[in-house]
Image 1 (cartoon, rainbow, N blue to C red):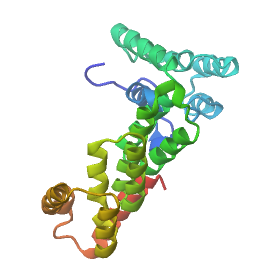
Image 2 (cartoon, helix red, strand yellow):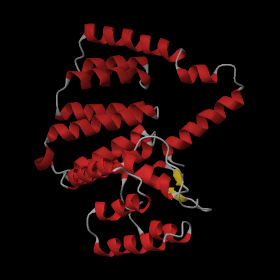
Image 3 (tube, helix red, strand yellow):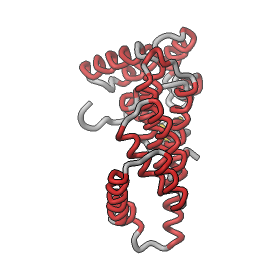
Image 4 (cartoon, rainbow, N blue to C red):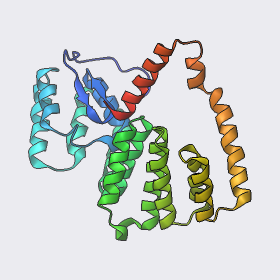
Length: 265
């Protein structure tokens, strides 16, 4: 939907809290926006009695409340639950409504693990790294290799490593990459694994590990040069610039806020 969406219904005094992305929703327009933009994040934190009660008590939408409550009892398609929310205020154009219907239909026939991966990817993209890691872990715990193949689960481990690295948990990230490499012998995965080793291993242990995995010396030299360049660029990153000139206490508070966001605490 192009342009601005004007609030047609009163705003809630008490917001609806979406746990997965630590976000408060104050109006049906905000709810519609969230649903449209985050279709893969729709789960029982949205499709539940609590949301129905919030729509009734905070927004005063009794007709919509009854309609949604009936859908909860039927336990049918997620589309049957969320599409009436869009219809309530005509949030979507006819074309957009058809698009989201088609998207929901595609999602509902996807394998569970694929849907869960998309959800985890969305969470990591939002900076909710812990939630994303938990979702990846659950996929690996319940995996059914016959459905999607071993390469899919190798990619899960790779994504999980990326989320750990964002939290500066380099050893956990490296372990994920090594497991991924054990499933699919990817040169790219192996190089990423080698790049992480010096970030948490002492020099002697690092060199010993290089020997154990029979790392090519030329490759290691190139990776070390690349890592040095990344460190150099990090000094000029947006985060580094935003911290420049700040008092130590301010820097700590800013980094703490980012950490709390990533851990949903």
